[in-house]
Image 1 (cartoon, helix red, strand yellow):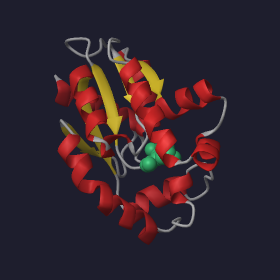
Image 2 (cartoon, protein in one colour; image 1 turned 135 degrees about the vertical axis):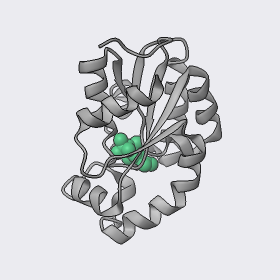
Image 3 (cartoon, helix red, strand yellow; image 1 turned 180 degrees about the vertical axis):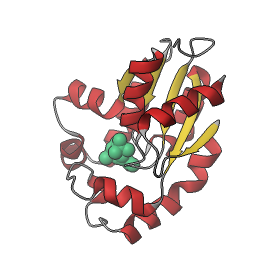
Amino acid sequence: MKGTKKHMNIYLIGFMGCGKSAVGRCLESDFGQKLVEMDEAIEKQNGMSVAEIFQKQGEEAFRKMETEFLKELRFQKNLVVSCGGGVPMREYNVCEMRAGGKIVLLTASPQTVYQRVYKTRNRPLLEGRMSVQGIEELMEVRRERYEKAADIQITTDNKKPMEIAAEIMRKLK
Ligand code: S3P
């Protein structure tokens, strides 16, 4: 199936572990959008993992890299951008995404997120917060900005990435 109507970009936002990467891969394989993994791209540009960037240069430096990276995408089309979970927290980033296409918020319950991330060690913001309660607290802090940024919102609990990708394309038509 072909991609979006006006060749717009799709920006997947949402909390860590909400399925942005998995859904992004499906939007690429089944709907012809070109996948951009923000964290991976920033890691490549800097020759360091996100965790190392946080450790050596601090979170603020990482946030600036995210913004600079988003600006680089401004004139590209037909992308699906799997954004780091902190991206919509900056208003500037939201304007940048709005100018480039549609913003899709993926959500999941704190329990689902915990099940998806508890074995991973590459997310500095979950260090010391790796519990359902810790996840829920940070989710609450972010909820309002996430919801305000989104053009559409989709829950991912108990759904397969492929179903979610199809739901996104239906809703964006
Ligand atoms: C972050 C989410 C991570 C990564 C970094 C910070 C956040 O990306 O960008 O660890 O602030 O929520 P994912 O959402 O892809 O895990």
